[in-house]
Image (cartoon, rainbow, N blue to C red; front, side, top):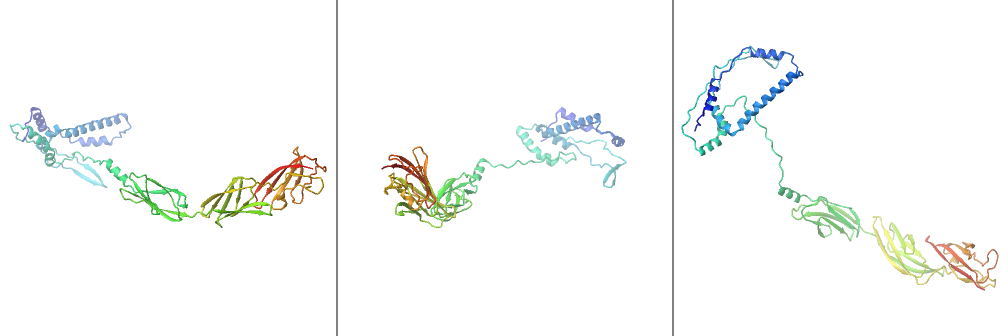
Amino acid sequence: MANKLNPFEEQIKKAVHDFEVPYDAHAWTRLEKGLDKSIGMSNPFYRNWFVGAAIVVIAVVGGYYFSIDNPEAAVIQPEIASQVEIPTESFPQEVEKSEGDLKVENDVVSTPESIKTSTPEVANSKSTSDEKKQLSADLPNEQANSSPKLDNEKPSMEVIVPPVTLNKTEVVKQDLFEKPFIKSNSTVICVGVELDVTLVNNLKEKVVWSLGNGENSTGQNVTVAYLEPGKYEISATGIESGLKSNNIEITVNQKPEATFSIAEKLENGSIPVVYFKAASIGEKNYQWTINDGTSSSGENFSHTFTKERDYEVVLRVSNKYGCIGSSHQQYTQETEFNLLAPNTFSPNGDGINDNWYPKALESGYFKFTLTIYDRNNQAVFTSSDPQNMWNGRVNGNQPNSGDFFIWKANVIDPNGIQQQYGGTILVIY
């Protein structure tokens, strides 16, 4: 149903009908002459004129597109467009092509005398509100089908597609089913040594660990110690997703045996010696320690204890894989040993107890240095020979009964262990 035109619309219609384009045959010649003149854009006047003209053109074009997008203008536009007849008469032009460039000669443009318009009949009855709504809804399609396409038709707009984003549920699901990746702090360990294996990507779901020894574990991390040597594969599997991680192969090496035996023996009939022997032979390193400050290395070890007390003996053994085994035992010394040195003697020349010397040093079992001091801490005798004994003389003089002296001995046993002994000597006649 056609809309009835108001007086303002009638005036627009009449103005369009009476509009006549003036013809100027010399317009194009004048334009070419103007373009041939050397007018530099560096001139502020022309540059400002150009910027102003550009602003005016942008404003006009923007207003045109705004009117097209305006719903009220859209109701009128199809009707006016349908009333305008576009002349199909061609404009004669003579065009000469030269080396790819177009040149216009004999500018002749024929202009139609008038623009003919036709006025459709307008129904007298008014449209109801429902009909107006239906008309507004159908206008875009009718305009597209009925309006001719002109050279100055509005260019198509570029469609910008927004980036695809995952919603919260999809993100959680993607993180939940991420493939687990594991790593360990080592791939070669020894029996009984703890190994830490962790998830690198910290999954949101629970995982179950396969430890390669028939045992399983759960959690983001796992700590395991193998009791038997061999090769084991560790992996993790997501409980909900079923995704399996990479495999880590663990090599477990046997640690050496570190137990030892203890045996007691008197050397040279007077020196109490305790012998220790490791149960495993041929390993890389052996280290013995005793809580009296003594230490030694080697498969076998012997020691002479000086004090009556309990001692703790520890053995540490390492093999070619770097694995270490250790064990300790307690040994009890029941009597004190002080190189079997007497604390009195009588150097009077009667042939009885005339010389003083520690009995344990006479056997030659130890290497030693013996020094005797008087009450003023002055050295009066020194010896490193078991046959060189002290006869009590001080600077060639016989000591008096009741005089006392101090002795000290630094000894080294066959294992190279150095010990110190000492005591007092009382002269009695």
